[in-house]
Amino acid sequence: MYKVAIVDDDRIIRRGLSSVIPWEEHGFQLVGEAADGEKGLELIEKERPQIVVSDIKMPFMDGLEMARMSRNKMPKIKFIFLTGYEDFQYAHEAIKIRAFDYLLKPVDSESLIQKIKEAAAEWEQEEQKEKRLNESSPITQKKFLEKLAVTHFTNEELKKELSLFGIKLEGPEFLEGNLMKLIELGLSSKVNDYLEEIQNQLSKNSSAALEEVQLLAIRMVGLIGDESEKWSKGSRKTPFSSRYQSEILEMKTISEIFELVKSIAIDLSVYANKLNENKKTSLVDKAIAFIESNYQLAEISLQKVAEAIHVNPAYLSNLFKVEKGFNFGDFLVETRMKAAMELIRQSDLKTYEVASKIGYSNPQYFSICFKKYTGYSPAQFKKLI
Image (cartoon, rainbow, N blue to C red; front, top):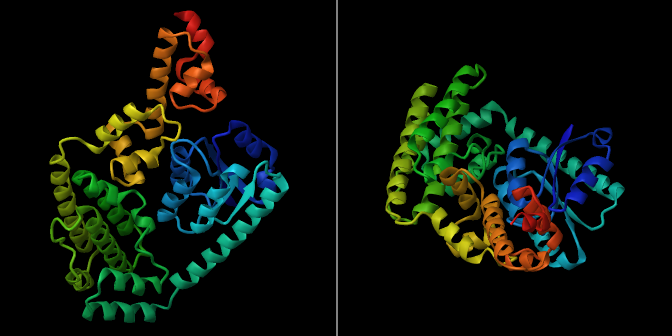
């Protein structure tokens, strides 16, 4: 049964799609719904659906950015976007990021389920193709390993060779627990724990051949090298040379292989921690300062804030959770609600005027958010003062 997730900031549309369509009768499992792109990304990472039905234009993170981030880890995921006529320029962007399709609102349930079935069929074809690649003959894999032992590959050349087996360094499932994020944040103990968990699982798996573990280690070291070069900006010579390929292939145990991988990853995380300590103001603090100065802008979003402080949106989103214990969207809402409460206390502004001053173009949506945050409608809150 294929998994489907729904992401839309319109609660009526979300609930309508969830309840009107008999998902299981059509061979689908509805795994959840989310009200914005940031929460949608969390839902996708948790449930790993094959198909996502999403609005394009949403607060905090739009559907296009959510799709781009999801694709880094789940390249086969199919996105079906819902859009209004006024969002038509977004539809062109959807084509650029290879969305499966987009439908105009209001969407007809029969048309939508048909598109979802087509998306599931395409996903299945890609899945079968990948399985055939992964089931390459052991002889072919052995020849490849022998070639690795005597050839010095660049990371790009290694990617091409590994792609023959359906392996992609950009987003291997083994690293979907955010290993690179842990390294980049300088959390060496968590890096060690994460890699030990993978090692333990492989050690318990009697079907894991040594050659397969060697291939995995080469993938991981290659990816760590590539990603670290991006964020270290050439500030040091990274320890990821081609000599590791031959070294890994000479190793005879899983423990020996993972000691090397851990050594490389921890070394880099220690270096990353030093870089982070040298920053006087953390990126999250810069983001918070930007939000507190600009929360009244309706178009403020995770992407806008990330651009303002020159950082990747996905990285910033993760930093919020790690450093502050809450996500970007929650902080933006809290900032706006505190400002709204102050305006209601100190002025006679109408609800729609308060909404406009704190960045909400839709007064009804503002009222819903205000009541969810305070437990009272704006009018009821005014009476309490």
